Length: 126
Image (cartoon, rainbow, N blue to C red; front, side, top):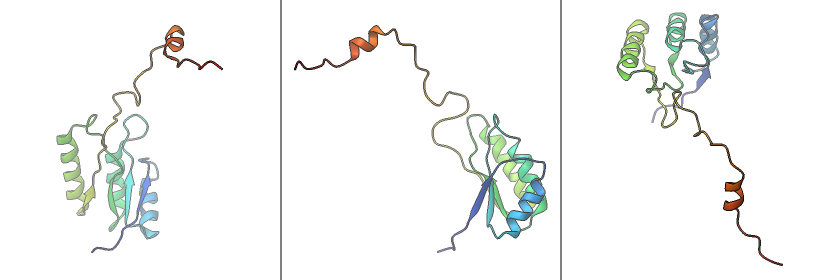
C-alpha cells in the first residue's frame, strides 16, 4: 500500500502562482490542485504551467474539470502537453452531475397562489 498523500486545493491566479506553488512544495505538500471554472477564475491550465515551471516534485492537477464545457480531446491534449513539459504526472478530476451550462436547480415557475391553496392538505376538524 502506498503512503497517504496530501494535496492543497487552491485557485488558478497566474499573478504570484510561481511563488505560491514553490511555497506549497517547500511546505511539504505532495500536490497542488487548482479549481477549474471558466466562469469564476483565471485559466487553470496556464496556472498549472506556471506552477510546473516553479516546482520540481509537486504533483499538479485540477480539482475538478468540467467535460461539458471543455471538450475531452482538448483536455487530454492539454494534460499530455503539461506532462511532457514538467516530466511528472498531472491529475485530472471531472464532476458527476451538474455543470456550468445549466442552473444548479431547475427554475421554479411563479406560483399563482391558488395552486398553493389547492395542494395544501386539509386541516382536520377539531
